Amino acid sequence: MDRLAVTPTLYDFGAVRAAMQRYVDQEILPGVSYAVLQGRDVIAAGCVGWADKEREAPLRMDHVFRVFSNTKLVTSTAVLLLMEAGRVGLDNPIERYIPQLGKRRVLRPAAASLDDTEPARGSITIRHLLSHSSGLSYGLLDPGTLMFKAYTDHQVMHPGKTLAQMMDALAELPLSFHPGTSWEYSVATDVLGRLVEVVSGQRLDAFFQERVYEPLGMVDTTFTLPPEQHARLVAYYAGADIKDPMKPGLKRADQAPYPGAYLQPFAKLSGGGGLVSSLGDMIALVKSLLPDGPTLLKPGTIAQLMTNQLPPGVHIRFPGAGEVHGKGFGLAGAVTLEPSPIDPPRSTGELQWGGIAGTHWWIAPKANLAGLVMTQRQMAFWHPFSFEFKLLAHRAVGM
Image (cartoon, rainbow, N blue to C red; front, side, top):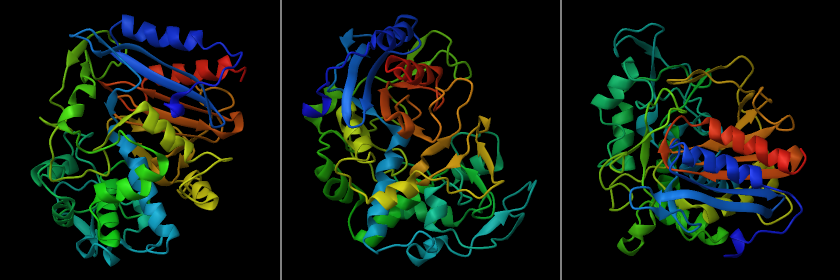
């Protein structure tokens, strides 16, 4: 496949491959596919480890991965395409399109019940949804909290609910904070998926196929694999200890997030985490955000996507992980970071996002580099392996 054709360079990426192999040998990861881009050229790509450890099936470039929250980039791109067409506005209230999400109530600080609320100071806007500042929650990452129980009891994430039914469930629940005043990872991108359906008049999968996959040549990305493609889906594993991502040991977890996921149709087309994809398709998607070549979105829109959307002083909390370090968040869940002690020194202004199974992409505009690394192990969104991959990629090209 041309999109995985590697442009010869004098750079040595041996250390990158060795590092990824080390994670496999230590039974921290089952297998890793990766690529490094300089500009739009793929200058390194490879696979190490297993697609199925128990069957000793080696990982190949054409294997398909659960990308979980990297689905958010596709959904957000779809919304931004509608924005460019004049169909939606970033600061439009969501109730203009999904009426049941208007007239929201917000939990009071230290609320002990869902009834302890006050009227929202303003509407949820599309910009709030794109930047995770809507006040919505997830009910996945913060067990023991009031909102976790509420989302569970109302079956907000149930795969048997259509996106329209999910909106009805959300309408019954308060917000965690007033829209635009804080940041919390949430079901906001699933709401955006329903927005795409309402505005376009198409099912989300049909819109994706017509407006994103076909223009970019993405041939492996889908909500449901056809039977003849089931063997390409790699096995999914949980780590030995979810709180210690570096503890050796892998446990087969193919039934997560629910039995039959991605192998048979479900009512819910999750715009926040429902897609499978391949390394080649993810490269095509990331290339669509890079300059000096064809893009789906206009340059001005991409610049907005890569610009911090949060006002100064906004509280940023990732459920289960505490405070999130970083300058802020752009549209589409892209993270704008200042270099941390474990980031490459030239990663200022870098954009990145990850999925909970270890699919991770990043773009470092000042270094003219981009990278993708994909595995299938339940973990935190930013596992130490992804930071090491990034650091070694920078070093390989002398950055």
